[in-house]
Image (cartoon, rainbow, N blue to C red):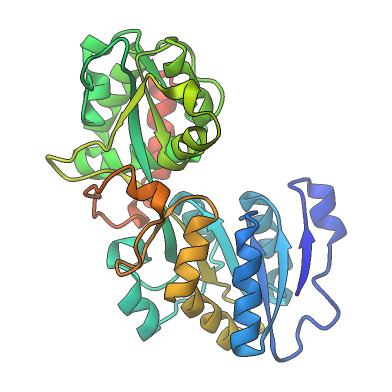
Length: 338
């Protein structure tokens, strides 16, 4: 297997790190991937072993990869784009990069809410956006819903990332889907009023802000919390968590996913690769690379995730996150969520 890497710099994109001179040969599949987990190597090796198809991998950040495929146009060697967050999949879809794939395997294995309605992309692992709270400050979770983050009882208590963060854009996009733009804007404005500080840092910083008492509650993807629990358990002994909206629609989840490129030179191999990602074997390794949940219902989560407990997910189609993303960003700007 050949592997390469690119950066987001336009100069690097223009310079063009060619996949190989044999990129259009039969028996290959070219993967442009925004994932960087060591466990993915085992996936590629197993796919090559099972199929005899050689995997050529080009790594980079999502936006850089999307721009590269767009620039390469009809001559792109890319067969598959693998990226994280339905919002980024939508960006590639919006640029017209994906082909529509009608695969019985994928349609049967991947739940309808975790794949594009017309088969342009499919989710292969999922992540939950959970609420964390300081147990020294609150004996019980002060809120159990995303809507509760806007309650005035949490004034000065909320830590959350900036509006430029794709996870928050997707969360707000889901609220637009449930409550309409007006309701979502009212929510966002009230959450801003409840900020403990201006948004800064990543999800781990929000968790550690709760642990340090800088804020009473925070929002983060579940795997960041799992990572801290594994590496610094003593640092978050006073941090509790809830899967939000369990008495209603369920917890907001997002996906890591992939689609076949419209101008793929090896479309049949590309489809075979996506179908492989839906296998029991691949689901385990794909999800475990970042302690995410498998999307195939028959595949159980790993031991670390089982300890978090079962939860009900919001079953709206995640394609809504991309469709509502532009409006979500406008709402963030209007309410002053930096």
